[in-house]
Length: 484
Image 1 (cartoon, rainbow, N blue to C red):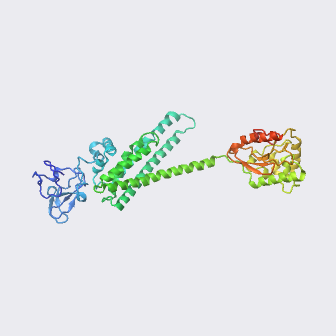
Image 2 (cartoon, rainbow, N blue to C red):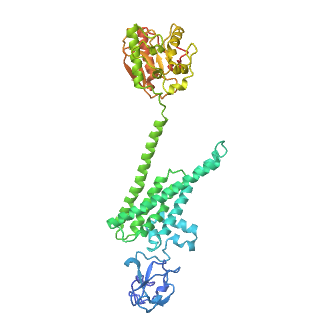
Image 3 (cartoon, rainbow, N blue to C red):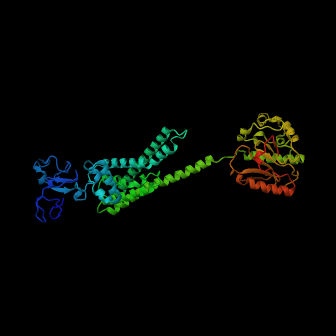
């Protein structure tokens, strides 16, 4: 409220002339934002607030509720809120959105957007101190919903242009999913904004960065949400980070402008609150995504059907016992079930639970693996028939999840690294899963599945050197009915 002649501030004056130049004035000649100034009784200083469109008193004349004297708007002493002029906003400097009835909603929104991006301090100074925080919160919700819809536009476009006629792509399901994504984006933005508001204001109060109530911080944080405009660029979240950063800069600038004399502390509190909220959220999101990827990778990694270490140990012991008692290798792996051995193996040592998936395989005499699992007492007869049917140049044969490759290896051989048995299920397994092999010296070795092909080449080089039949490079092709 400045003198129209000399520009002198006319606050706190009972006289109706300018002290500087003597020009007469009346408070009713000025426009204010509603509720932004105090019209005080000249007798007792009781404050009243203007509520009409020009921020003037309604009614203009009345009796003071405290002293009972007659009061007219032009006889009052006009004072700014909070004891200074920082909360006073004339209608000419009122922020555009609060003038939407005059400007129109669309024009007012875009004018407010321009101020949030380029002149955030001017924007918040145009918000009366006593303006409702709920109005600011509603504006933030409207803005963030608009941005969320704009951000996900390309996804809708891709669906209708690229996938709308693809069989099996249910339009209603895709639209429903996109709407949920829009709502989640909107709700997340509002939640982060509110959390930032509360934390920033709390820090301001702790470090003396504000003398205003929470609604003033709400004005700064909520109206600055317009500065998150880059996040609304329709490229599916790729510009979210610049949008959030611009929001933070604009919000901190508004907090500083809303708290003159304490601007540095107010801005620091706003920035610290943003770091705690947005930085913490981003860090948590990254950690969650990394954990989820690792978990999915572990779950998706194929696993070898499980042959327990105890079964591998019993099989190695049974092979060694047979060599010691009979002076030779078993003719067939099923002979390891013989009751004549001190520690014979059981069928479930040779066939894992996953190996049951291939239990329809049959030996050379037509006996199925499933039948032996049900009646292991038939193993000696099946072993004899299978051994008799083996080709003369055999190198390897299979029983369940095991490959036995002692054929042609001298019974007294203890050559290190020369394989005589291997756990290699026919059902698919992960190439990175270790494979157990038993050597001629009785040592059990775990070899990485990824190096199996290379190790087979090395094994065959050793076998050529020793004059032992070489192994086929495709060991998985060896089944009970087709020894190689």
